[in-house]
Length: 113
Image (cartoon, rainbow, N blue to C red; front, top):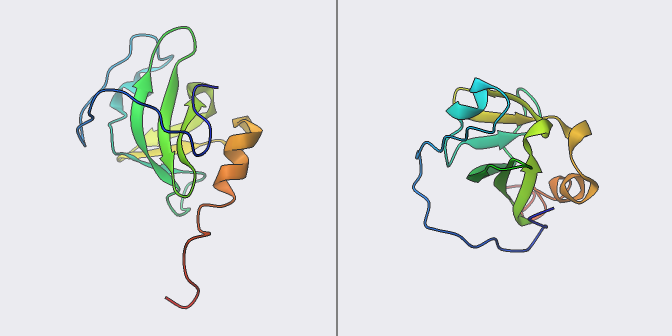
């Protein structure tokens, strides 16, 4: 995996809303993903992070920032849907370290606020 929870991935500066096209993405829906799009683990769920980068090549992936974990790589095969500025992941297709990171997204929130 190119990114692990807590490990920062370096690269060129990214602009919010920048369209990043990748000819290796399997369907046209992926071409509509924009940097800064919110990432969810299901329709109607709370956001868990945001898209930071799209990587093409033999193993295309999204680099997403997950709250309390940092930048992680998610293979495009784990994307369930893309619409309305949202990327919805399929948790069953995520690697264990990413699933574990998703389990701690709200850890820094204070109860009662």
